[in-house]
Structure formats: C-alpha cells, structure tokens
Amino acid sequence: MLRRRSRSRAELPPLAEEEVYARSYGERSDEVTNVKRREPEPEPEATPRLSDRSLRDAFRARLERRDES
Image (cartoon, rainbow, N blue to C red; front, side, top):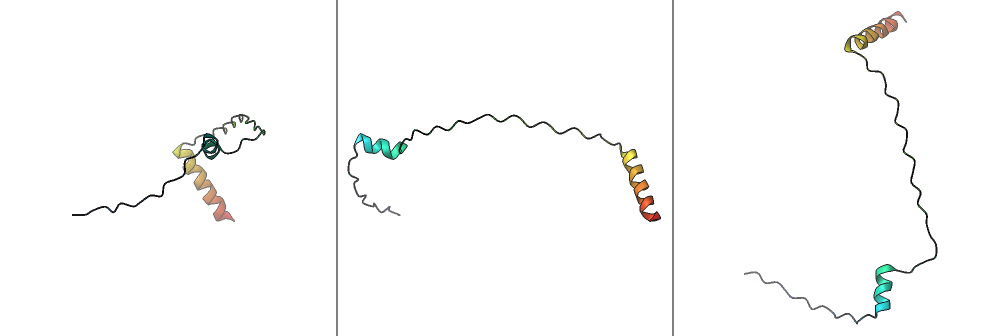
C-alpha cells in the first residue's frame, strides 16, 4: 500500500488588506492607454478563374515559346 508523505507547510504571516490588494492588483498609475479599433483591411480582388482547357492551352503556348528560344 502506498502512503503519501505529508509535507509540513510553513504558515504564512497574516496579511493586512492593503498588502493583499497590493499583491493582487499591483501599483496603480495615472497613465491611461487608449486603444483604437483598427479599420478592417480591404479584401483582395478575386482573381479570374481559369477553366482547365484555357489553362492547358496557356501551358502549351508557354512550352512552345520556350522551345522557340
């Protein structure tokens, strides 16, 4: 049978309310940061879709031009 070892914890000293608040929230400053909403980026223009036949014809024409050079 396995037994857990109990570890003795050191007791922390009691904290005052001011100390708890300081630990939770930190120091407050008078600086205020304004966050502005960004304008949405415009969507890119849609590229024209090519049919498989026009794509094949363009590829053959490019191959023929490459052979001529």
